Amino acid sequence: MKVMPIRYSSDVAAMTRFYEALGLRVGSVSRPGGWVELPADGGTLAIHQSSGEDVGRCELAFEVEEPLENVAERLRAAGFEPGPPMDEGFGHSMRVQDPDGVWVQLNLYDRDLYT
Image (spheres, rainbow, N blue to C red):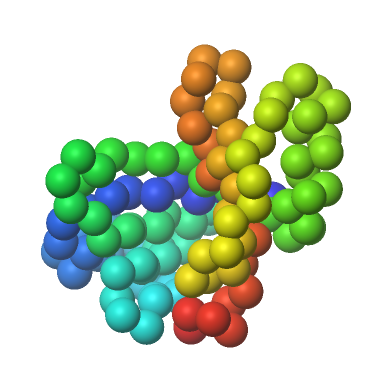
């Protein structure tokens, strides 16, 4: 499993330039350009196009390499109820609240869909 914080921004290009100046390099990019991944040694920073209340927000996400249904079963067995898996432009995602009530996103990528 790989950790992936998602930074929501109104200006993906400017945010990408900022993190490139810090030393990160662009990895996968969505075809419309509203999603950019910047791989690092400890995971990947994702920049997501957004507007309104989400701008400036950072969300914790994890890239999983197994069916989301398997992860959901483990979460339920541990006493946590995830939301349903959802079709996304990049594959599938599922959200679950941690013990403090903060949402965590789990992503299963189909990289052929957006790279």
